[in-house]
Image (cartoon, rainbow, N blue to C red; front, side):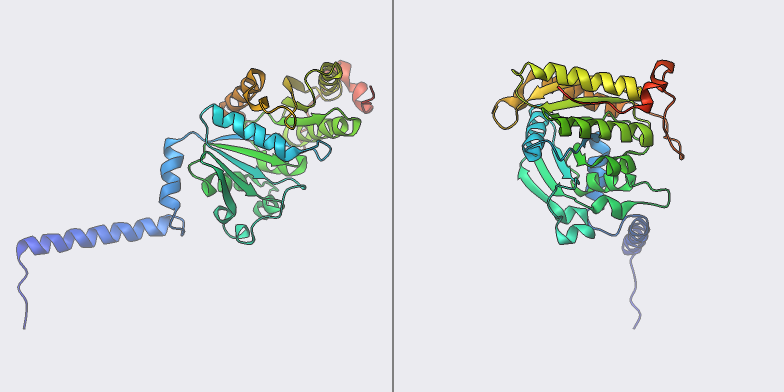
Length: 292
């Protein structure tokens, strides 16, 4: 027995078939995970910004510093994903190796945390770039508009690539911490051609040595590397409960995000060590001493 299909029903069936075909086409083009549509929606409506923090194992209470930075960003209206990929970070969630989103932990309505020690290396491509990790981190927390990326200098150099960035150096009132901050600056200058930095000095702002430390590090970066220390803030994240609300820190973070919005040409594929000013060529043969 043959059924007779009314013209209206035929038109409906044709429309349904067209919709199904379009859906199949979208599925072929989209990533396989079900959250891809949500990720694209947030990516299209929110400006995504990266704030790279150069890890320093000689800075005490680095976790407290990251908490302070995220609290200061929240105070400015941002939603923050803290990605801790430093060598001192906790081990990542076992499923984060497959899907970073599985390792994202909500710490606050506006702050999420991803333990990512060792994960950037899994995203290194044939050119040695791990830039895809940054995109994957944004996709892992699509509601966040700022990724606070805490990583060792070597990993940061792989991840930043041609991104516009002004890395935030961490230091403390300790010669080893200052040497490490300078070493991180030097590596990023040589490998990523990044020439501007900011500094967060974890110390009491009332210490008279704080200004001398900042001046010494800025002078060494300029003299030996040709790099510029744009801004520096001294805060005591452990002992000052109001540190996240300081106006100097707020200005530094605003400048950081403004730098992330600026354009920068792609870094060269070969060694990116810049030509130093003539007065610095002889000095560059020596290493600075951080003794006070």
